[in-house]
Length: 417
Image 1 (cartoon, one colour):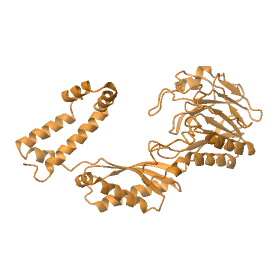
Image 2 (cartoon, rainbow, N blue to C red):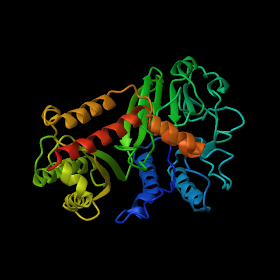
Image 3 (tube, rainbow, N blue to C red):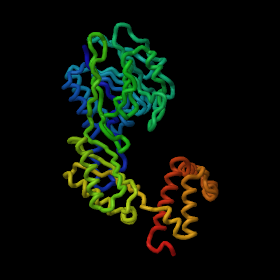
Image 4 (tube, helix red, strand yellow):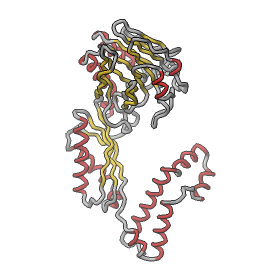
């Protein structure tokens, strides 16, 4: 029997731009989170008495600003060496050979797979064969699977690969391949990296993304960690256990204000949403984005005084203790309470406006003539992003916002005049 940890996407010292300019942001705590998460991984490896650690790329976020990042990682590898734990690692798109200009020698317990060709390593201590290949440069658009060696008979075969598979929302396409191609290779376990959302793609054979070890922004919410894998004497996986490692937890919390007519009730719902997220985060710092949705009579006051909503949410966060919750952003996406039938019946002109708004919401998506004319005047670098915003989901969001603003004005006191 042997045990190993599968991890990837450490992104050590990721810069987390913009935090320093935001008042109250726990910038230093969040910047240091990737290092503390790695420390959690090292302690887990020692506590679980694993035999080796597999790292499937992107140890670093980019080229080192100085040698401190590399020295920090190397010091943690030495801790594993002192515990008798081997490390098998590849480079991904963020730490490819062409990206990292500074180099440091690695401790003797580490096998760093070449970027020139796929390699196979067969440690003497266990019946296992590990196959891997590092990225030679940042943009690898080639399917690397055909270059991986054949499975070694009589051993547990682990493929270490940094890949987006056939494509993944929110991630650039690198080393594309299909699950069928991985399965056909005959390996027992594919240790993947690149996709930050933890996922078990397949169990026969095992194809797994452990995700990154620490969320870096609000698009990386929820638990982040690694997999602890146990293989028995029959070379079968008996356990593939998820272990969280993150020291700061990101959350995107939606609060539905439909039917809510008082700030007291808004505060109650806010505290309830935060309390649930705090409980899930345990002892970690909670970094939360609050989004308020729904149809409510509070819409007008929330729009007119966004600073009050921000302050109310901050006050609710303070109730959980200093430094426990940080509000990354407050988004107000509510809608006014409007009876379209009552508005249309009010007078002829209002009826025309209401009908025009209904048509705009359900239109064919064609760009208005005025917009087409404006885009034709602007240079391409400005026009192209705006054209994209005016199409698909972007256009729908813009139309909803515009319609809501007009309807709100129509329902205000004195709008008849």
